[in-house]
Image (cartoon, rainbow, N blue to C red):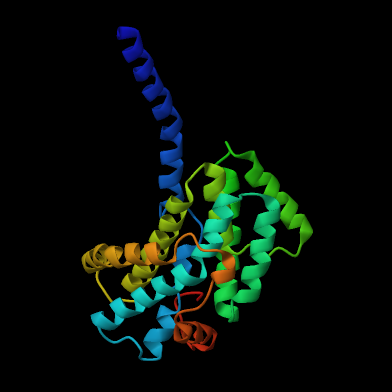
Length: 244
């Protein structure tokens, strides 16, 4: 009896020792201090303000929810597929598909800038996964890889050992985090109000995750084309704080 209990205890300790580094890597991947350039982009929020589409807290809440809906319908399929098959061939295929799917230059550049930065940082930080560095070096030599953010996020999550459900929820989280941060810097909401808003919308984000998760990339689609149009106007702004 005592031997059985000892074996069970040892098994739990071994499992915990394996899961512990995974949890730390997961949290670091989602940490805003990771220099991936996400805070340089507003998801079209800055353009929407200047177009007078957002003039109240209710407008902001609606805009954020639409961004999350669009992220779920368009990008989660790429995150999911990449997480399940985190290899070079799958990544390059998804990268080409997403490059052809994105319809405006502003969102395309934002995606490639963040994806390139994410892989560079991940290859330097998560040294326990040497394939990240190898994949980056090979892709840079190819010269025709766009480095879009969503597939790369899924690839990194898969190589770190995250489940596809976790990776998709994480992608929704960083989208919500970054757009709320952009709203704060654009003086649409204060820091405390931003925290409250993020917590309130988290329940909506979870519902959207359940709606759009685990879909094939062939099902990826735009649900809010107006947002895509607004973001495309960002390059024409006379004065701007964000890159997109």
